[in-house]
Image (cartoon, rainbow, N blue to C red; front, side):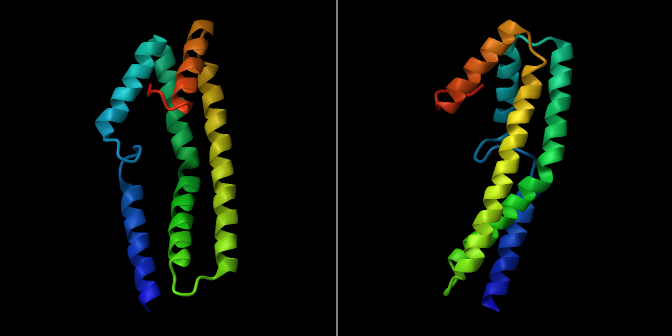
Length: 143
């Protein structure tokens, strides 16, 4: 019974977190908007490019929502099972396999999305875009 109550609390917490506007953990909505503005400014995007890239972003968020939600739920289930008095290792193995599959799908979608964005850019913008992504991956900056 305690496990069921704990799962309901965790599921409700996850549902509330999912219902919040999309933003990075610990990053207020304003900062995400500032990051988008810096991205537009640094790449010197035209109005047409901004509209096209925003449409791609919205489509990407919509198309990955189900996988992102499923991933959050699986992570909660994994945490619950791992902290159980007597964890079921078979269940943990199954959850980690499912989590890995979801993460792979989301990574593929993210790479595809970046390729679509890059296709909207001219050669100079592509060089700047690649440089910004390289710095971001190395942890030396944000857009």
